[in-house]
Image (tube, rainbow, N blue to C red; front, side):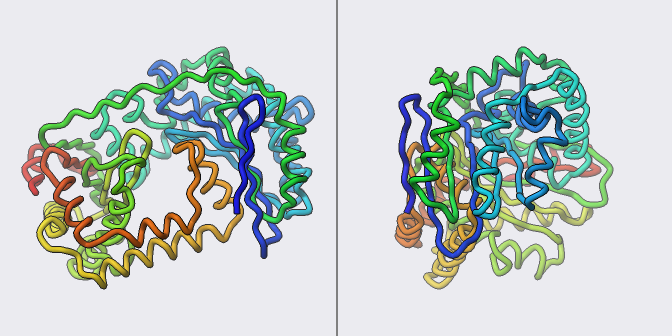
Length: 421
């Protein structure tokens, strides 16, 4: 059972005790990410995340920041998304005090040395190059671009080479001051803990953070009347594509129906698209369907890497399976399999303290509420075959259909002609 308290400055502390583990995770999650950025500082959330590991007052270098965790075998890292940025340490429970001291130190006392900022520009440039050179990853960025275009929801989380080269130290620090306010953050402690002691320790480090008023993000604009297609022409040995539809945000009553649809289509090795594209047709090594729901956006997408000469066949096969869901009600046995698959994955994932910390903290940041696993299971179990049919007929329409593709092609119209449901 989790508990949440809110301090006078607005900081939320969540504790999630866990039996049968020797681990503890301390996660600081901030309610800001790439969707909160302006175009001239696109990538600043991610840039800032990198800089928290470059030195503090007591640990004045990247080496001295890393060593304390390395010496105890701790797992530590940070991550940036569209809606949040997180910093965490996972350690043996006996090392809780050290881990909390470490996380709070990098979060509260980082120095952001000018020389380190300049060096990190180069690091992030190479990270961007890595993504561009990896079509399997890059096509996912193109997918967001074809959906949302030139607005924060459509920009790369890492930014562009142009913005990373021009963002100043002042802009970075101003963004931190604005967005890293107490009421915009959560400290979550999960694992083998004494709750009262954990809360008391977190208060000791974090209760003096300023309240502040973080800026809000731009409203996402979604305008589409015909199928969308974005082609990135590149010499490759394999065609990579994302093919899917606009769907529902995280507050929609059919969000779990959408999740189950993605599993039925391509979320397991016995799913329809995995069997069709890989096992039956031999078109792809990887094929996967995912659904993603955010506070203001949502989509369902199938990703695959396929034989260049048979890409048309692969795209048509995906669309055929989409269309089937609008025509034929999913059988009770197939729906039950998808439900048990989703519940099983969630249960297994939450065996780990870091997953528990993120599970509860991300819900609180994004939805301002936390559902227990049992409540989620109950909502999954209530989804019916008629719900799947209804949602399929709602989302699988030409005016919601989009394709992002990377391969050695020049003619985008060739692919647009395939986009029919």
